[in-house]
Structure formats: structure tokens, C-alpha cells
Figure 1 (cartoon, rainbow, N blue to C red):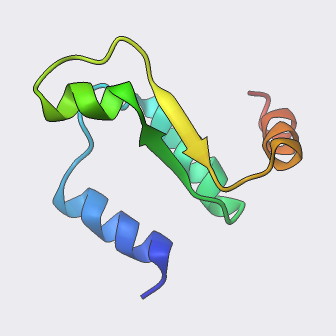
Figure 2: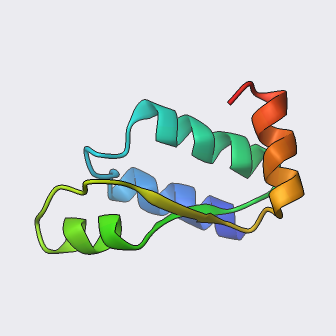
Figure 3: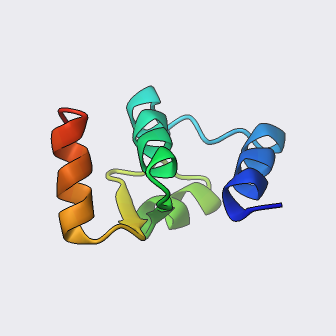
Length: 77
């Protein structure tokens, strides 16, 4: 099973927290379609794990800055 298939299986079993908006899910789909990973990182993960509400959301991706910019332009982000 490929990594993104495993991730999708985990997401189905453990739905994302409420702060993961439809826009963030859409961004995840865009990066996944382009063959890149994108993950929640930093304080939002910590806040969620201790039962808090994140004040901001940080993301990390396997896409290079140029690849990210191309995706943002392609999808009008």
C-alpha cells in the first residue's frame, strides 16, 4: 500500500479535527494529486494533542518552493 493510500485509510478511520477546514482538506487533495505530501506541523498539532484550539496552522510539504508556487498559480490559491 502506497503512503498516500495509508494516509487516506487513517483519515477515514480517524477523522481530522474540526480546525481542519474544507479549504485545508482541498489543499491536501491538490498536493496529493500532484504527488506531494502536505502535513500539519508545529503548534497546531501540539494544541490539538493537549485539547486546545490552535490559533494558527503551520504546514510542511515535500514540494519545493517552485513546485508550491506552480500549484498555487494553477489552482488560483
